[in-house]
Length: 318
Ligand code: FUB
Image (tube, rainbow, N blue to C red; front, side, top):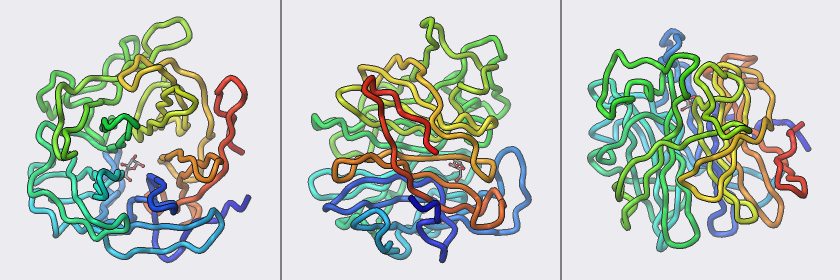
């Protein structure tokens, strides 16, 4: 399989892939160089719009559906359109997207369209009670939809430890349980949370929570949840150690048990992915920064086949 970027006319990242209308639709970030200097909070990831990509077969031509949503279209947004995701319900398409509001706090918004490729129209306010970044929408197959999200450092999850925004909030100490992504069921119109927001626990092989000091395994950002043979898989980036890893559970609300690593560090600082089944085969969509010669904020989306063994372990991707 080729290791080429899916498209080269745009810098793209954070691909969330879904099968809609028998095509693969990819909802990526659209990277650009705005000149904002790099820092540990990711200020240089300064994106202002989204484009949706689609293809009808892996390796086939990729359609760019044009601008799907811009920062200027969304009254509550100040900047930084980060990693989005999408869902379909009753023929309506939903785009979930994180961005900083006018006070510099990351929130998650929702926009809708009657086409999977957009354009999308955003709700005037972010999802009530939302915070942090990297929404992933799980269609549970029983009519329920869940949003999973969160990211530490620039994603601000450490500022929400008490449930209230604290600009000085820090990560737990290395010997304390790591922060986990959050999950909430979505309301029937997919525009608000129904019930409580809970934190997903990720446990080690002894049933103990992964610790904040365990940078090779602890949750950092970029959650993706999918089901395979009746088991829920939560996969994510370990951030500063640059791995893609996964954990499994019998419930979307966890607890999850850490299972292993399936992608080694790629070119560039961030690593982010999605996993989708298409025509009986499984595919990993992810990004690296090879297209820009390694500039971490100018990335490109790629796709690779993903395999499980008989026990449901995800095999390391070459
Ligand atoms: O693209 C901006 C941020 O970089 C995403 O939200 C993170 O997951 C990381 O890929």
